[in-house]
Image (cartoon, rainbow, N blue to C red; front, side, top):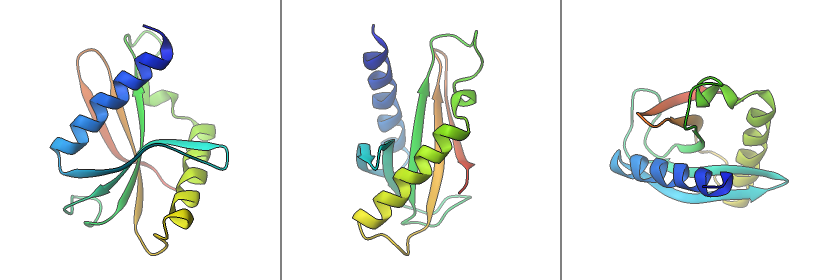
Length: 122
């Protein structure tokens, strides 16, 4: 499986995971200003971190092996800046200016899905 298909498969797993947990998927692969967010979703009911209605930007990382570390370790400063840029564009384009936002990471390995809520902030 090539890396694009591998990544798309990981995103599909993450979308199903989020839907089952009460998130509403708003966009996939949102692109703007040279940046991209894998998944943009809305929190339907409040959780331990955010209120219902918050917009969640989700980076999905899938790895077949942990030989090079956990998938979430690949979300460095450059990726975070890219997500913040994409989030700012989304907020402006979709007129969600007064909406709470959060940045999550979903890491997927062959054995588990780990949802890291509020993985980073602006």
